[in-house]
Amino acid sequence: MKSEGLPDHVFDGRPVIGICNTWSELTPCNAHLRDIAEHVKRGVWEAGGLPLEFPAMSLGETQMRPTAMLFRNLLAMEVEESIRGNPIDGVVLLGGCDKTTPGQMMGAASVDLPTIVVSSGPMLNGKYRGKDIGSGTDVWKFSEAVRAGDMTLSDFMAAESGMSRSAGTCMTMGTASTMASLVEALGLSLPYNAALPAVDGRRRTLAHMSGRAIVKLVRENTRMSDVLSRQSFENAIRIHAAIGGSTNAILHLLALAGRLGVPLSLDDFDVLGRDVPLLVDLMPSGRFLMEDFCYAGGIPAVMRELDSLINRDCLTVSGETVAAIAAGAECTNREVIRTMDQPVSLSSGVWVLRGNLCPQGAIIKPSAATPSLLKHRGRAVVFESIEDYKARIDDPSLNVDENSILVLKGCGPKGYPGMPEVGNMALPKKLLERGVRDMVRISDARMSGTAFGSVILHVAPEAAAGGTLALVRQGDDILLDGPNRRLELLVDDSELARRRKHLKKYQYQPLYSRGWAKLYCETVQQADRGCDLDFLVGASGDMVERESH
Ligand code: FES
Image (cartoon, rainbow, N blue to C red; front, top):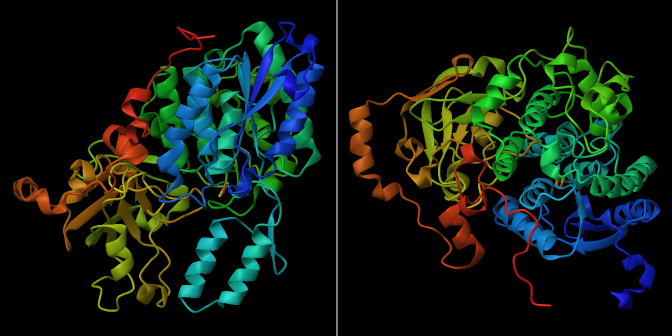
């Protein structure tokens, strides 16, 4: 390492801090992280540590095929082995795009060194024709407008340029912003990490201070598991509800808890979120964007508003408790962060549905749904695969109306594989042209955190694992009773048993016969377990049993 210009005296036993960087030009949301890493290093040096940066697989949500989620667990494996295999005492995780944050945290949790996250930070607000527009959320709206003939393609392209105009992650409360918020809620970053824009000088200051903080954590031997307790996960779930967070975060928190041995179930999201109103008025559930959230007070202001609804004694990597952070917070814009007395909406979080169609659960985000559709009975229009959906959705002869329920199969963790974000299926063109803008949709897929609609996701078991979803046929009646958390396929048990006998024709053949995707398909758990690989659940610590030097 002297070849890197490191003098003798830095090998004097000082804390060695790994900076795990998911920088990549293929991941635009993380493309500024080399600059952020330099600021982390300044803080590490200043506090008497030795910073050493190393790369980790970068998962660009908009680039990776077939879907970035297929590789979250691969990133987690790489991060885990890189941390354990190298002689480092503490680690700073630099990530931001949707899957980089959870993948890095899961890997780090299985080693359990002192750990801090510094997120990419959101892009500046999108601007188009004098209006603020949000990543993803407005793309969905504009693309439906193009399909309906209400917007030209060149206007769409101009809006896209105004939308993505700075470094950083999607600036709606999509998965990236949600995960950055939950990192902060869990206590694994310094305060204000989630909302400070990527290009704000204060994010560099936060990176610098995180460098100082990680050295302190190493000296105190405060490990990741000392910060991430059942109580801190409860805080994350409640804050997830208050901010109208992405449904993807449910999978990531379940998987992270599994690495740490913290008991957490899908039902915890419904139960713990039930008495939490939606406080933050951000797209896709609301009106504003992350830059506004930052100026309004960010996550600490939400913590202050939630008051006794969160566990105030939880420790954070800043050395302060949640109570101390909340006490020092202030909300400066009540349009963006509401009070408990005047929330954006009383329904927040996610509803966890059960019934014969989803015995292991399914979810719906009520704040992103049309209220009148949360209790709905309709006739199934079934698509056996995403290819089948694409081939037929705009067919003028498709037997569908606004009361139908669109059902998509074969898009779960095993079936696709990797559980792509296709659950918010675009509506049939002929209904869009008639002004229909929402319908009940059901699938074993995920949906982008920036998306919206009356969309039932994460149906478990998935169709490819032999779930009831595989048995649904064209014209079946389906009942969604959101307030009572029911999702039922209204078909006799005897008929379902008969269909199951003939299930063969609905079975999904794995597309991959070798490599990572094969291992993934053979070992991935269902959505109610967070889609971790079965052999990765749990931790191995930081000890290396043998060494050959
Ligand atoms: Fe990377 Fe949205 S695509 S944060």
